[in-house]
Length: 256
Ligand code: C2E
Ligand code: CA
Ligand code: CA
Ligand code: CA
Image (cartoon, rainbow, N blue to C red):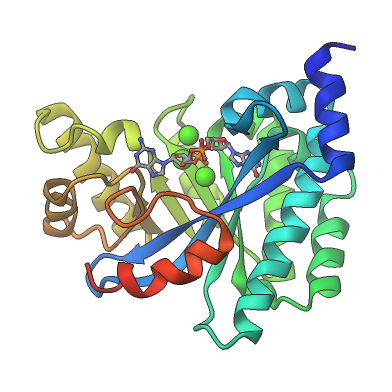
């Protein structure tokens, strides 16, 4: 077992993982419509560790299963707590990893966590990516079962993997996310601009919600608004922050 693997196990036991929250906004109204939960590892010596530095190992070793379950439970409980504290209901998005999608009891686990936390399924959204479609028909069955429970499904990082328009046709996605790599230069690079515009137009035609990620500038926001992308997230509004701070940013974000 590698050191990192040992440390990840210990981190889980010691409760060193944290969820940070980033708002998703309605770009026309400037209102928060949802939130994405993003994991961090609060290491006692190294400080905050990015998911990019440990999620791949967690996936390889299978530790992503207990970590993923912790993420799901914590995010659902947090969303329920906010609702009970009187905040307007929001959809909480949770990232799933490939391993989780192929985990035998995923459906039961999601149903159980919703029941345990008392969160209504319409307020949970699971984000999956194209790279998880190793066995497309199997994944389609899982996604349909998740939809039957009542949770929403979002296609993350659209266009960055082995994209197939087949997925968009066959899968009952509620929304798709335009990856930040296309948004980054959409105001300067004609190719990125074209890709972003085309994804938005296609999503509208297919009647799938489209959300742009990685919005950092006012210019990008205006470009997206002009091209009728009405949902987005990014540093322009807020970075992912701890729950206490998220609650404080709600009011500030809505006045941008
Ligand atoms: P992702 O799901 O595509 O998440 C979006 C990433 O973009 C997040 O990085 C977020 O902090 C970052 N981001 C948001 N707005 C902006 C912006 O305006 N500019 C830029 N440059 N970046 C922005 P983060 O939090 O480091 O997460 C990285 C990846 O790690 C995620 O990509 C996701 O694939 C994975 N991840 C995070 N949390 C979890 C989790 O709980 N479970 C699993 N399985 N994967 C997770
Ligand atoms: Ca995501
Ligand atoms: Ca993404
Ligand atoms: Ca990504």
